[in-house]
Image 1 (cartoon, rainbow, N blue to C red):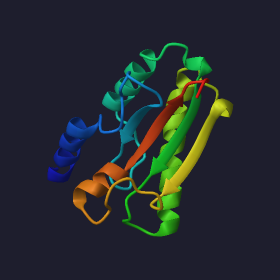
Image 2: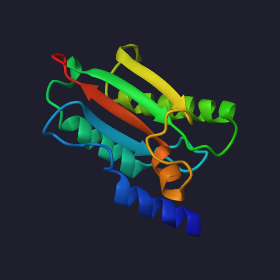
Image 3: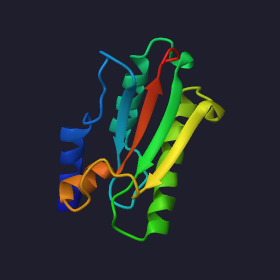
Amino acid sequence: MKTSFLLILFIFCFSNIKAQQKEGPPYIKSIFFGGGDYYIDNRQKEELNDFLDGIDGLDQYQIIVTSHTDTIGSLEYNQWLSQMRSASTIRLLELRGIPEAVIQRKDYGELNPDFDNRTWEGKLRNRRADVILIPPDS
């Protein structure tokens, strides 16, 4: 119970770590996951939809989904988990009418961390999928 509360608190505080800025592309929205999980909660689904609603001409953007894990577990397991996180994220994009065929996907597993996996905070921040939107003129 305490772990779930801490995860929810972390997600609430840091769900906007990656850029949700409108001042310049590329635009990035991070979706955070619990350890060993690929479930996207309703709050993060709403945030993703709000993020996408704020992008004019979304159908003109290049869309990339990247997924990451911490280093807990085997390399093979983390690669699988990363793929599952991408798949969950892509399903949400498909529900918005974005065909999977136009979405590029990069499943990094534990191999390309943005944050230090030697720390608890770094592990939490690496448990994510990023939706990256690149405008056509980039």
